[in-house]
View (cartoon, rainbow, N blue to C red):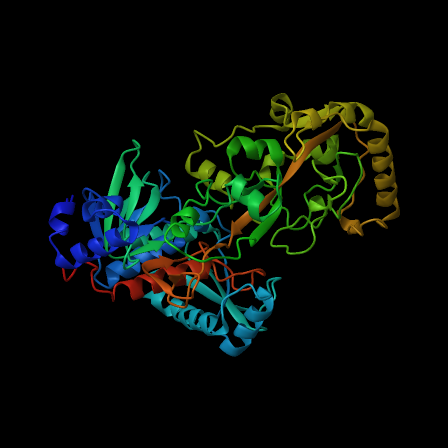
Length: 554
């Protein structure tokens, strides 16, 4: 490992002058100013230090090495599991090979003023259109298919992509291909090495390195000769950041890696980055609350067309239906009734909420299996269990096991079920915890719902008649539901070269932002994330390698 001492570095006259200038500004000696920011030693160095090894980090490393730069990747996880990319649905929902004018217009509309300038987004789109051909260079086999619509507002014609020649179209197989390409290049990935802060020259504002920790909690200083590329994901699994920018008190569980706790946000704020669209959280389907808490990630219904079978309804803690149950929120920017808030009462109107079902649904399959196109595999829990069958992230087993664990509540009658339901309120005040709900109200709700099933029409919420089956086979059950997310989009603002920007519209020297960490998506998910990650990782590295090392003249 390289050990560049501070003493040797300070022999450079240029930095000595810089140190004196800083000392004069803060009223301290040159030595004191130097000690404030320059590490005593560098534990290792590379041209590019890349923080995070998901889709963006992998492609940044591949591109950097391809251009002749040395690269070290710092990864928080103990495994090469691919971050959000490895837990995704695997389909590159984006607009490749389409008219940039139409695409730019779509983006400007979908960002509602929160996004990048038209100049920046056009620059990104030009880069994205280069990505398919560039990936072929590395043997990453993507099938690109013309599609007219995938449910998002996008140009009329565009191409989406998915990994070819694998066992399925899920992110786990996509990242497997990216990782194999990276391994062929000899990418140096340091697992269990979370980044903690950036090292910045206080006079030039250049980012010259990263402070990280190894698996034993020991501090390591990595010198970045040319640049630092942040590919560290979002804040999906940080409840406190969620409470600040989304719905206070309501935790939203990630489909992706639980390691995405927003670590990079304070790191870039500390060096002067402008933070944009932190509100942008991309919702997924509903999840099961208590199992998700135990797993520290979403144990998701994965329901894109309603949870199946359909012998259920969803009620709030007052025992009332409040939503159209077969519209459960995946990639959905529409109003979510669960977040309805009464300002005068200072309370959420419908949380906690519960899935209420009968023996028919209970016997159909373990709830754990999910009900969407990919089952549970496209969440971190599914990916982990697939790779670690002998040590699953949680032990669900049968629904009987879930009853024993207290995840599923049971009652021989609706009234008995209501008495047995327990949950915490969003205010997290133990004195307001739910210890049973109104049995008469719940019984009346189920009776009305069953009558709608018989009539084949839901006048209250317009649930599809094909998705309505009665609850008439006792005993009855309930499980608390929660919200889940695909990812977050907020982070440092970036330009078309993926340089992180300061509040005055200037790039922070030698700092880059990629993937969902400061995504171009500002509100509507109109450019997707997977191809954005792959494109921005490549672009950041290709731009960074053109820089001279920051100490070249020292």
